[in-house]
Image (cartoon, rainbow, N blue to C red; front, top):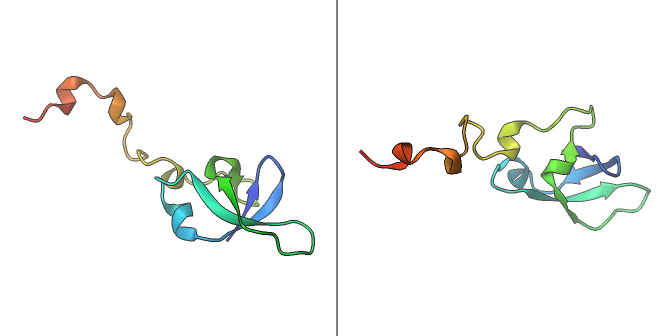
Length: 83
């Protein structure tokens, strides 16, 4: 899969799709596609990547709490106390 690195506007080939889909991973390993030579794998922050069409990555790939409206650290003590 190819994504665009926002700061450099370079295409990045994602080496491991499992890391891309895992919301607990904030970085992926990829290879820049700039020039004619095959580049060495590099680490990229997922927050700095987007689809080549300009669309952002899905929230479920970036945020492990995407199903919650609040972060667990913001929940009240009453909600964290077992019944």
